[in-house]
Image (cartoon, rainbow, N blue to C red; front, side, top):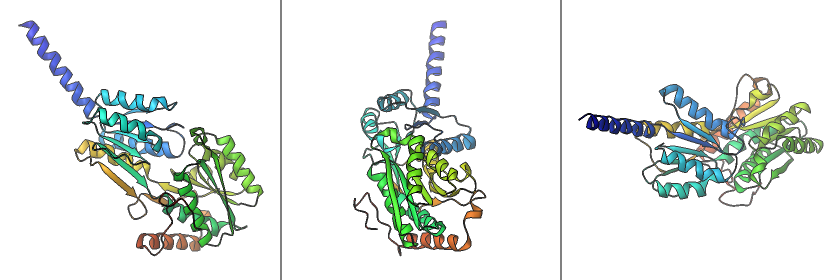
Length: 329
């Protein structure tokens, strides 16, 4: 009798443990880590907001190499975590493999589309937000030469660049200098090289530099500040990194994507499929706060807000480099 009782107690304990794991979401960050001041940190902020509001802990992992992508996903799925959110397009092959193995587990991937019955794919209209900061850059520029530093040279980052060129030229820029940091994932976490590229662009006459390069962008912003020039941050609000020196930041609401995935999992309303978030959906924007208020005059604010309204209304159609790899601006 005692053995039966202990067996029932053990079974009950296992049941509760499984339930607790099912209720606990998980977050896997891309290379560069959760404190990159950019893309990964935005994901972290969304997870932290969920924890603060619900009191529910989440599990997390910062990969150090590509092999860990699939390992981390499989470990979390085996432990019963759901939903599992991954930050970055490079997770697509790992998601495709692991989602098949665990059809009852919910997954979400940011910045890539994975067609699977248990996967939510969240992408953003980065070109729309980049157009806005391009308008601001051209209006703030004294030389009418502005520039762009990308991270890894991939179509997604070219999408940022093309939108930026469109907005800058529409607002009077005569030249937009563009450089990428590299063609491997290391390009996301090389602030020294980012700073060197920014200095080179400034030497060519650029006085506003937009970085879309993950952790590499921290070096770009530092170099611009050191040279007495303006920079533009990306993904997270980076205005506070160099108050009065960062013109604005192109906000990509990765935090909202993570928060929504976690909250939908908690509420039993996790919908799979494809989400494409732009200005109209609140997925991208530009940042205004006390750190950059002195840099944004009324004319600039009015011009950017008009461009935003025109994009939402369809009066301005910003070219999407992902649909046509040929920037027309």
